[in-house]
Image (cartoon, rainbow, N blue to C red; front, side, top):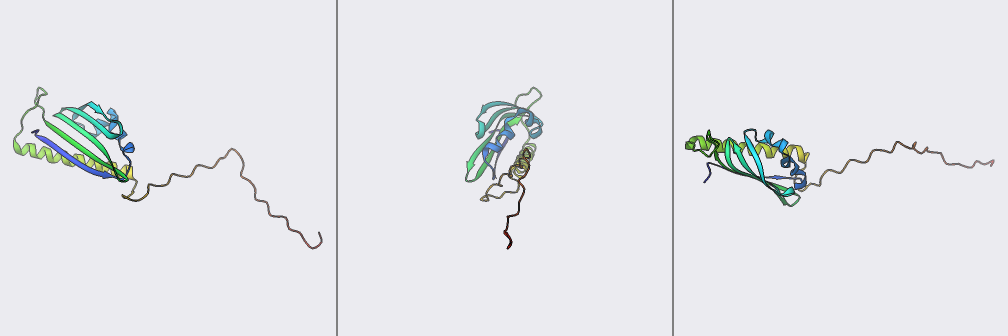
Length: 156
C-alpha cells in the first residue's frame, strides 16, 4: 500500500465541462501541486485526467469528474510514496507519513473549495443556474422615438 493514499470527493453545482479545463492545462498544475511534477497518462476530456507523479512523491494521481444530478462530484485520488534522493520511492516513519497524508487531504479539499467558490457563483444544489446576461443594446441604429398619438379636436 502506498505511504500517501488520499481520496476526496466534493460536489460542485456546475457541469463537469466547466470544471475539466481547471485540470486540463499543464500551466495550472504547479499552482495546485507545487512540489509535484505530473505527466498525463490518460486525458479523459470532461471526465478528468490521470497522471504519473514525480517530485516530492512518486506514484499516481487522478481527478475524475462524475456528473451527478445538476452538478459534478469531483473525485480526487493520490497514491504515492515519498521520493528518495534518487527520485525512487523511499520510506518514511509512520508519524511523518500520517502527517503528510493529513496535509495532502487538506490541500485536496482546499482545491475543491476554491473551485466551488469561483465556479458556482453562490449557486446552491437544486437552484437553477444564473440566467445569462441580456445582450447589449445595438447602438448601430438610433432608438425609435416615441411619437404621441394624433388626437382629433372638436374643430377638425
